[in-house]
Image 1 (cartoon, helix red, strand yellow):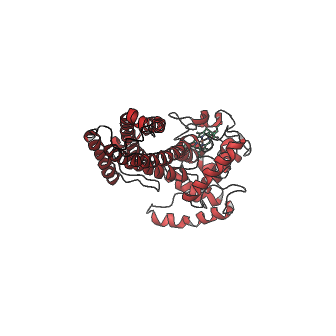
Image 2: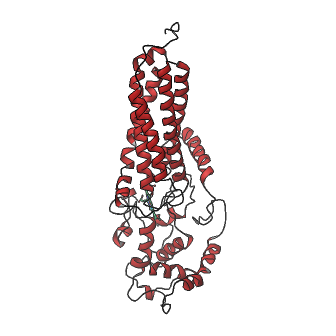
Length: 382
Ligand code: HEC
């Protein structure tokens, strides 16, 4: 390595690269002002174009991940002066393409989140780390250009430090995005015990920064921190009943349930549609499970036995929603990060299974538990 030639190799014209870099940064900043990242179930009045672009997020994100991954290798080679001379410009090109891809992936992701229902720890970490990682890559790009312009190995090394860190943040962020689509256990499920332990611990540690104690969420028999028994929570909701009645200027409060409405079709299915069927219907049938009709919900997925009449313990959809949100195997449904069932919704599903999981029972003939009547009425009103 020619450590005896401290000055630059022939000065390169980086004008085009500078213009692109500055454009990318401007687009990133202005874009974030127009589409600010939101965290609490971001749902907006957005055009179908926005939602259409959002759907490209899962496809498009692979470009930056891939190209920036290869760039890591290139940067190792570039860490010598000779390597930099040979591959510096190629690395710069990859960095620019990767940064542009990351910027686009971030915006597509924000647009995707506007579909609503994106909440929870996985989502918070995914969005935050995606944003930070991308900002880091843009900053790294500026430092690389400065380093190349001045032929300064110090600046180039500083660039590499920023770059590797940003890529690491982005990679971890991508992982939490994967958890959102494939469930928390996806990566760790088949990991050897020695690796699995530390991975799960680290993941939980990171999630602990963004997750609020989930009092109002799952109702595990024993498990997560706030041990509020199900009954107590259901009572809380019951008190909401008069409020609901007051707020809605409906004529005479109709007797529970409509005329020929069916329990499954009009009470149970709406719960599944709202909380499960983004992943378990025609478009997506994760775990081979569809629940958009009575027959499919009863048929079950890979493991069958989705709802077993009269048997809560055998009913997979019941046992999996009952698991603690931070279940070690990541089996809890819906996956952490997605809109969760309320205790009342869980209680209704259980009630329905216990009294036979019927597809034909009429609402007016059903005897809903008194403490769930308010919830049932709410669902029937839509
Ligand atoms: C964000 C997507 C998503 C949502 C929402 C979701 N699931 Fe799942 N579900 C999955 C994935 C992914 C799998 C497959 C991996 C696994 O088994 O964990 C799965 C598997 C299952 C299985 C196992 C099927 C079998 O036969 O192996 C059941 C049961 C299930 N989900 C029930 C539910 C219920 C009930 C809800 C709503 C309360 C729900 N899921 C909401 C993603 C989702």
